[in-house]
Image 1 (cartoon, helix red, strand yellow):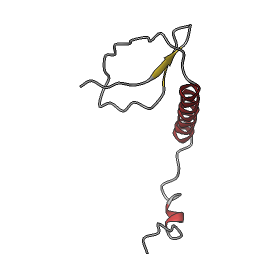
Image 2: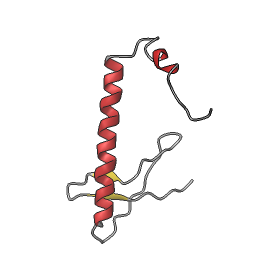
Image 3: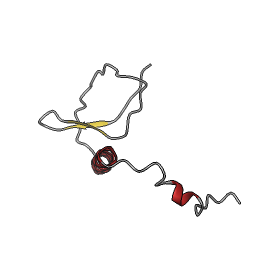
Length: 85
């Protein structure tokens, strides 16, 4: 299975993948560094994906530290509107 992902690597060697990579398990990677500057769009995408990753980590830590009660979510089921009526 070969897949191509766009990424940016800085002068310190820090690699930032532009999009989330969903693989079934850990994989070996071969990296080709192109001789071109990243576009403004790719820099923006890296910034956004990094912000999302940080927020996901904070949420996961929060739920691990303060898990919801078993009945906490059930209180909202009676007033949810899924638009299927």
